[in-house]
Image 1 (tube, helix red, strand yellow):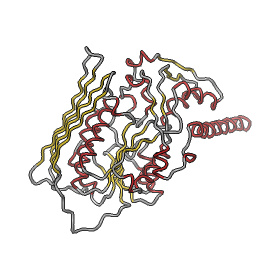
Image 2: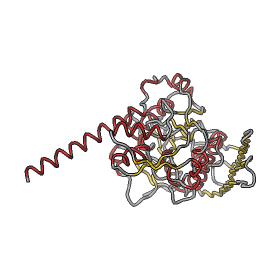
Image 3: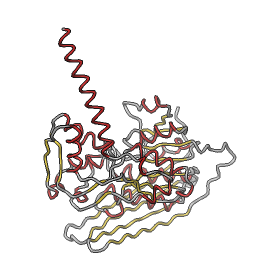
Image 4: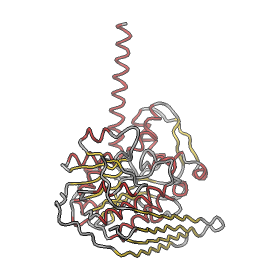
Length: 398
């Protein structure tokens, strides 16, 4: 039976995205959030507004936040163990690696999962506890936070719902609950350069959430990511092996993909490092790649040519086929309008020397895209060869 707290949460979230088609020089985007609570609710009352203005000549970001934080007395009670963590978005590409890593390192892992027809049994099989809640229903959140020390937030909304429902309103509710219930650390995954692209809804919302978390007063770490190597398997590797069409672009955009297993490993190193508290980190892979370079690498490793359909960058604003290679989660890929970003000469990468020094990590231990894809193709080609050998054997016997 689910624990119901006597807390009535009422949320009212507003999301405004303004785009002036008549002016190419200025793009304006604003997010504002207001929350109303019943008098007996021990949550913070806060209002936050963010206005981001982008100009091709100059860029100005103005953030304003005001809020009074109300102390919540949780004593007396059982002290919360530092190893007790809640992973939000635990079934996604990154979330599942965070769960695996946490369990391997001896953490007590609780996974917040939305009620679904196909339950996330694999998380239970690994040894995690699964609790049902929905960020779009704030009243379901508090019960999941009882006894939790740290929240690791990898969540992104489903494709069929408006981006703001989970990624803005849901996150604001989660951060408010975390603050009210004395959560001692909050790890938030964001997107590299999100502050530079207010024209892309998800990036704009990630940037606003960063600011909201910062202003909440919660001890936190924000980690900006560039792209996942795992996303390239379905986008390029599998279609090339199956001799299906691969979408490519002549856009000069370069992305420093990182293995989600490395992201998970570095996240827990950061979590244990007190010097990292309150910091904004960016995790980027060893090298930034264009679409053409990724396809060429896959062709070489697969030993066969790709059937590439190249879409000129200028046409990208009319198609979302290519947004998959950002692959924040499998679900969300198709709905992200990254066309504006992809047509620009953007490098989704960041120097990592300072981050490695801070975390005490050796750059040599970070998996390169060549190594990651080589391992994938070696394994898959061996399996295909075995299957072929078995089928030949079967032909002889029968």
